[in-house]
Image (cartoon, rainbow, N blue to C red; front, side, top):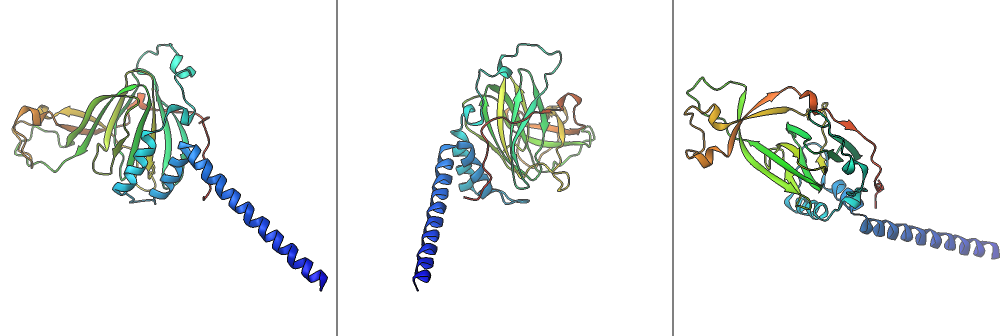
Length: 276
């Protein structure tokens, strides 16, 4: 009888210790999430992106933007003092862009792109994807388009490969600034970056590029609307010069030779991929 009672007491103690340990682990996980902006971003992305066809709800967009808007270069191990921003070697031609993958899964990816001055990420699309872009460091020019409705044409002067797009952004952005969000069919899904100063951009892509799933990257060359309009009537009313400047013609092109990027290892704060 005594042995049985001792066994029950010991088992209760063991169960109690187990509960305490689990509670401590939960508290540690909560504390870690509160301490790390990057970890909070990861957890939010894990909750928001559910794979192919997922477009975040407005409340989820607001949540992700709030986290990204408050992120600093230090949150991913960057500062203006790193060698990348001190390198004065002037490369002939267009400088090369490099990138580091912070995290990637089937549902989303987190990547940092590094652009030296004059570096360009040419006009490209994000098929079926929602992308959050946070400029962490530097100043860059961003130009973006969305496709518009088909045109009604009575002219043969326009090359058949051209497609009409509406200009969404054509401005210079300087960090710190708000997060840019593009959707599968709106928000500037086709965009280009040109670095004015050394830049670092944190991108959240959901879902990430995947040739197997039909999300391959296409590249484009843009032309002014007036270059091929020749009196064409569009499905929307654009008759004055100001309206015409808000549209352009895009032609799909092969991947530009100088647009290839080099991947580098991410050495910043790490993400803990656990279910909290």
